[in-house]
Length: 580
Image 1 (cartoon, rainbow, N blue to C red):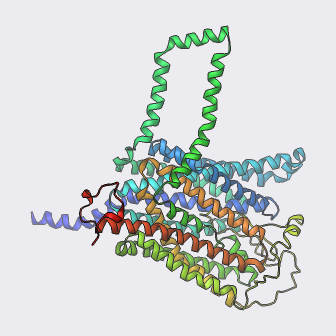
Image 2 (cartoon, rainbow, N blue to C red):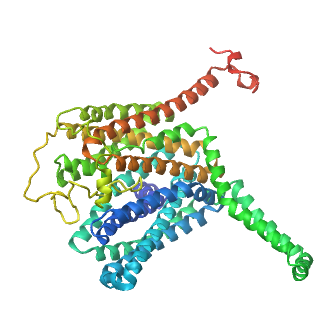
Image 3 (cartoon, rainbow, N blue to C red):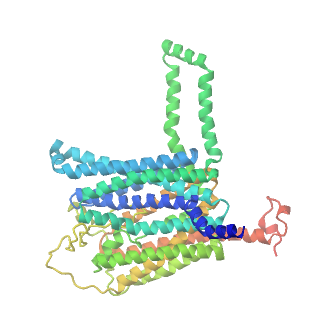
């Protein structure tokens, strides 16, 4: 008997480890890691592929970025509504298959283009190659929309259900998901970049297609396992039930009224007018449905109690203070090498992970709403270094130089402009005037002589800039997690999809505006002005969150200080209640 108890005690740690690795939570992490790894490889590689295909020009990449941003902006609410109206497993599996199948198809088409580009150029005066470019961008955009649907359903809905009523568990899961994002943001582009460097772009296409094929099968199985281990995922509120009831009612009406169907056929034979009119009304309603969904989604988003918090997060996308193509290109003009930038990107990933750790600790100690306030203050305090850098030695800021001076010249000379990428993909490389070509490793100025070495630039300004950007990642990711969990906790289950779809649209809108701002002021002399504008938008975002927190914490204080909440009528004003 005692021996049996000892054996059970010895097996217990091993059993707990096995239980963790087979739990729904871990399987969800594993599926997200595979999905994110494939996403990051594809987002990095597709921009490089398009640049390589179009002769080291950013035109196709810029078009791709505009199409992606515009599609999510217009279709975010509709995608979210589709997520709400269908069962969780159907949405997750459909979006997974569409996303990976689109990437696989894109990879195959790109391989064909790389193989037969010379022949395609001669066919139909190059129009066939242009159609291939359009096809690649269209399919890649479909993959991005499917990825958006996957992110909404897994990160905004499934996680909430798996965590159950335990908000601490939800916070830990959100933080772990962000840590996975941080690691894959750095490691996945490095992996596919090495394959493309030591192999070829065509080998890179084949590798990504093969990875997505294998990953799709594994992720599909993992989703099914998570769904089986979490029975509550099968339960969804009214919106799905209403949608299914409408479909059932339509079928019943069709089955119960055969005589009317015969009568309609007779009337069509005799008059040919009335049934056609009814059909036109039905078609008009179907055409108007997406526009109604779009309007209803934005109205519902505006009416959410966390509207100001969501807007505050969206305003943080209107910034050049991140490791995107704009800041990378500016760093090269200031004399930073590629190796130094790679180290800085690694440091930013570390501080981002520190932000996820800080979020869980602060939420436990101070509460969720106050965590957002502290995170916002920390981010703004770090960005003060970026503001100071604008006026330090080495800063190219020159307000006497018009930011629009050489815009027309750049357009007519067909020089590349900054590209637009998705908010999740901030590691693309820009090819612009005076910036290096990173595809072939050259550091020759685009419009200069290789023998002409630029004058050394003091590094005080750019050092302060990146110190502020890297340090601010702690507050940024903690704030991002705060708003994410606020949306998860405060949005009703039947509206999670459409509200988060609109939130994605807002994020893309502000990100799009920040790239338009750079296109209008592309010269390095105006970058300091862009820094000041960026900090202003970040400050406005946190002011919105402060207003939200003020309302929320005020309500909590009112509830806590009211002696008998049940005795207070809903119609009585707050000023008439007695407080301690």
